[in-house]
Image (tube, rainbow, N blue to C red; front, side, top):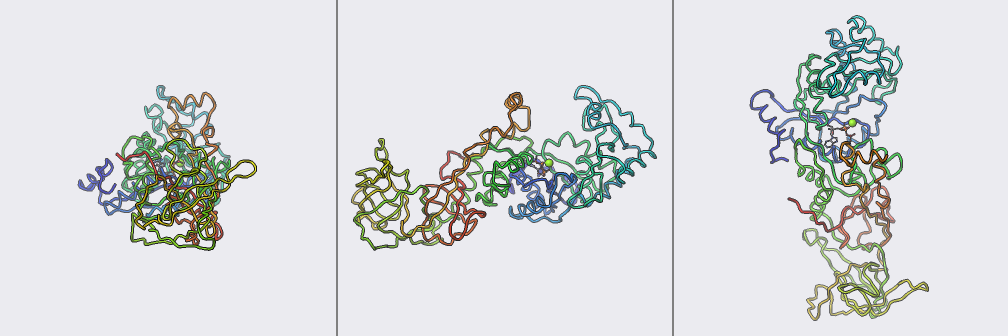
Length: 563
Ligand code: ATP
Ligand code: MG
């Protein structure tokens, strides 16, 4: 984004040039009711990126005004993820630390005749609100006196009323064409323990009232949010102005990020976790920052991806292949090359001396020669991939079959002579011969073979587990359908289908194979490119000193082309 212009950057630039603003302060305001996902990464990159471009500041603020859904676990995870993405916040705030000030501002509204305590139930309030085409109806409690409202609001705070018995509403306009302005609820009673304020409060401000106050209290200049808040902007401005806030932040909306075959709302991600569809918030199939990290994504790849998706008012669906493109690009230079056999088939090289092992030399990363060389042992018994042998191959099959010769990467040509089977007729071993003349790097030009196979030395190879992933959600526009009025969403609703009906039962495959012995010190989060298989990450939860467990981050090939 740094060198790209976008409409928000243009607004900020004009604000600075015209003197409307002297500095730029943005904030990233997650509610700690779940883990961050890649959509949040977009908000983070935009908020931190824009402030940074104008020598401004960005705060991390926990928008924690709903005690029932929030938790310290989420606070900790969010901080870790923002830091991991490479950003440093200027100030750390909790909206809950402003509860006293928010209360005082609500009292100010009451004194000005701009807020009243309402006894209507939630359902009645909804009915009185009207619709897009019909004006709303005024509550019978709307004309309570200032004194009565002050008294009732104070008693709400003291805990004299049950949940839902009373609310505080802004007194704006029940016939406004903007439904958000029809006397929105700004405080509710909720007898619940808050993760930060404990039992100090039993009334809590609503988002639409709290958020503009939080921004104003912190001196935020540009309050960036997603387009579903566009209709709330007039209310945002009303709150800032009627509460007589000194600082006047400006709300600007941008289109949210959606990705194919992905659900992004925290509510749904939480459901996947709680109903055990996945192995926690950081399951590598999750679009969470922690899931992508555990899968093997790098902060650089995520940042570059998000920047490429741009900043606009529209919210399209981005192909997940684009996200994969950026991690491939990032790991190309960084990840050591190695060989791993995922589904092993033993090969005995019958003309290779029984107790001999030779060390072969190979570059750690041919794209980045500075990474140096590695040594690969080779001896009489090796493993190749089961898929790389066919007893009765179709035309144009260039891998191993009886009588055919192939190249072993970094080693020799081998030729398949015998196929050994068990009593059930399954192939259990191949007997091959090698040609010492054909050693890799020897300049041999005698004859050519078409297939090059990866392999590992059977005697010294390290056992490893490989976890291969497919999309968790088998619905291309799952996220958009979440937002409701697409034809498909309406159809689904009619059929009683939810996103859970699209969960892929085969999203994880676990196989057991072997890796090169020079990888014996693999640590959690180490990343490699396994020849022909793609990029893998050592899983931080399951990798042990005895046995590494690798998550496939992404395969090597893609038809995706960046425009
Ligand atoms: P969710 O619906 O997933 O819970 P949210 O918007 O309720 O998301 P918050 O914790 O309130 O989550 O979001 C913090 C910030 O991240 C908000 O400014 C929000 O607009 C932004 N954000 C959330 N999802 C996306 C997305 N998919 N694309 C861009 N920004 C997003
Ligand atoms: Mg939310």
